[in-house]
Image 1 (cartoon, rainbow, N blue to C red):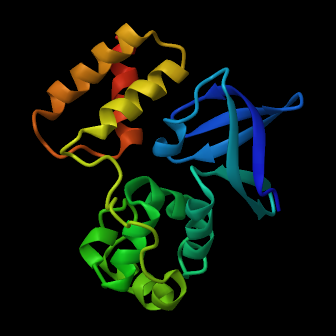
Image 2 (image 1 turned 90 degrees about the horizontal axis):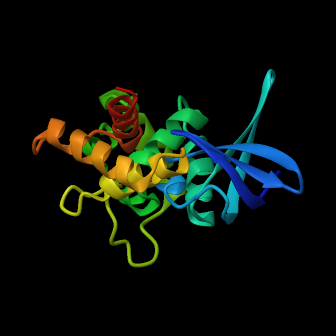
Length: 201
């Protein structure tokens, strides 16, 4: 297992980054929240989990060791693969997932694209004893809380990482916010794609 990668951030995209480790570029799939903390040219140390398939080796990266642990535990539930586990962590923090499973909050789990009511029930049944309760202060519930519009910062950082100027990134974020017009924001990855379309016009 590759526990972490450490090196210069060589590139960053909507769903992953490339870390230059002694001249070898390692592609790492990450959540938008993790990507928001990675800037091209900066040095980064990213906890990782290697998923091995017959036809691929995929490295997933996380903001911290706790996020990686939850990612790996989520995949012990039937029907939950690495992509769905990553999507769950894109929507909820590790503690929010622990709380949702512990309290059987199916509504919170079905906020994740790809999880329906039956899938949420199965996840609760299989993971209730494995995930445990929230750790630390347990304050953060959902990624990008609407009140603080944290998605703005994440999308802006994503655009800057892709090479756009801060001015262009601000303008694109404002345009996306105007389209939302007070509605609940979709996942950050979708917002980033919308912002890229604005810039492409």
